[in-house]
Length: 83
Image (cartoon, rainbow, N blue to C red; front, side, top):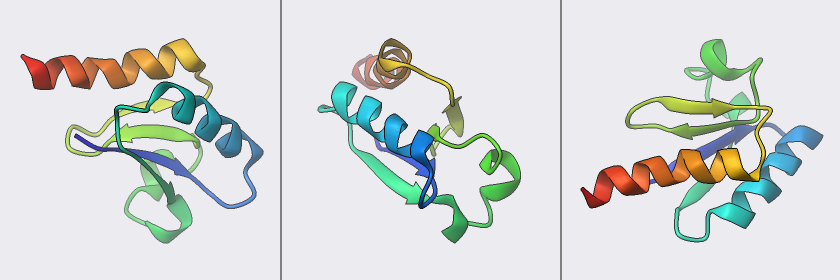
């Protein structure tokens, strides 16, 4: 299970989201992705960044989110995998 943190260069909210995700995601691989390099995601997410995305299901947690919300989002998938 992997996750993407969609953002873009120079986005202070994206930096804040990255800190939140890093604090709650030591057991989950989260890759930061610049949405400017992925035009296929821009229609759905460009105006919502930062976005924490589980790409297989396309479930997303859009900004604003805090540490408990991000942790809950990530843990949902961990529970699904362990069932």
